[in-house]
Length: 146
Image 1 (spheres, rainbow, N blue to C red):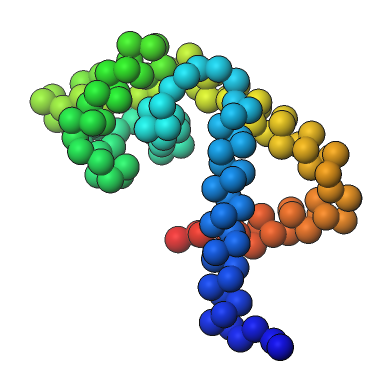
Image 2: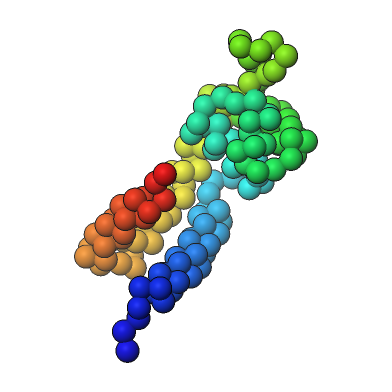
């Protein structure tokens, strides 16, 4: 019996959701130290990727309350991973940015997670399977691109 497009789409969505959830958890387990919460890591990563932003902008982008982001930013500043500066376009606002220590922290986490994953892929997958994963990653990028 052949799956129709609707059924195969639903199955692919379900299987990918499960696999990515497990992969995300395993990557978190294998990141190097730092003990930031997922929310703190998310805000720091967003700042790293998108550049400086106000707390209000971060709250809208992260889909969480302003007060929650303000607390998160406070922890990141306290840890030395982020800092604030006046917004040159609006002196009443402050912009949050990633510090050199924050960039180094994120890079260390990425290297630790990718190193673990590379070892697993080398040990458990054939060369052909790894090529398939590379092709699948490109396809997933196309699916999520806006």
